[in-house]
Image 1 (cartoon, rainbow, N blue to C red):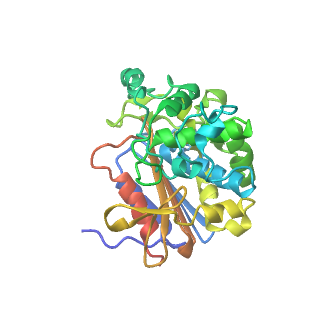
Image 2: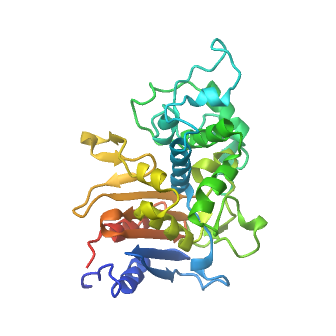
Length: 350
């Protein structure tokens, strides 16, 4: 029987992260913690150390990318360029008359909060994706198809009345921001989020454009079969971000201290709860983060997974703590990864 885990203090963090990493069966894992500005990083895994150290590689963060798109939305609204209540279809079909304009009333707020009445993915996505499900499901579905599928879709329920997690909706939001500003989503993210926060180790495409060895290699659930870097096609706004653990900590540290960030207003905005869902409406959501209560203040977090990697991002302002965990294995059964990372975030500081 093992003793209690050391707390996330400056003296106990290294031992605690090593213990946490051993609980996850993966070829590679990096767990990084920032506590009151002091960083601790642990690299581990069952595979031999790669040529590029694990903590210097870029990792696919999957659905946690939505927090970047949500922050972009908050920044564009905060600077007066858009409104949360803008109807997405109006920006995607400029010049249409009221008689010919799409009648989908979903707003930008509905899209980012998963309340737009959309399924997880468009219905016609699956036939083209099934043959490449474990390697490249999104690459064959470009942005134009995402927008076209949205404009012909009928909401399953009145927008704003039900919550249903949707990669489709988050992607449509990104394309709507691009249409409204006449600027590609990638340029918007780079100019309004990555550059102001100094995220120089973050990219939106697999590594072929940036040099060999920069991206971590993911693996299938068996932990040994490598998979290629994931191209997100038209679903980039929902899952394209790949970043170093250091960049991800910098990103979360900005959330911990909005006053010290050039995106301060937007960062404060996305910490505010905007909806409740689930049994007894116990689950809180902000524009971009899942929020859980704790004795020492709310926890904010988002997880993500791709065909061969997983990620967890979380922060707790009351204890000035942020946790980043990334791994190079897609763990589908008995997943200890998310639970391990969440436990680190929820521990009481010693």
